[in-house]
Length: 128
Image (tube, rainbow, N blue to C red; front, side):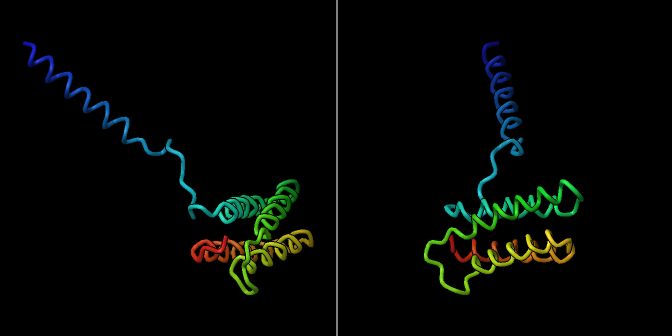
């Protein structure tokens, strides 16, 4: 009888452990580029700006704020040379902000997409 109870408890323990480990959606997401805080932060800010730039009114104003934050984040330079991906992303982010301020939302969206791509390239190249 004791063996049956022990076996049932073991099976229950295995089932509970597997069920708890199966839910990975609640675990914190690791940064896209480990040890590159500026790149990861800029990517989050650019994504938020891209999402908001599609709207109108207050959302566009909020998108400008996120673009300015990303521009500042990308300007934090640790010896990157002229022509780096990070520098390109910084320039494109600034241009996107100017375009959005000027009411050129399509051009701004294109520049935001290009800035995100350049930021990913900077992350892959380790330009933080």
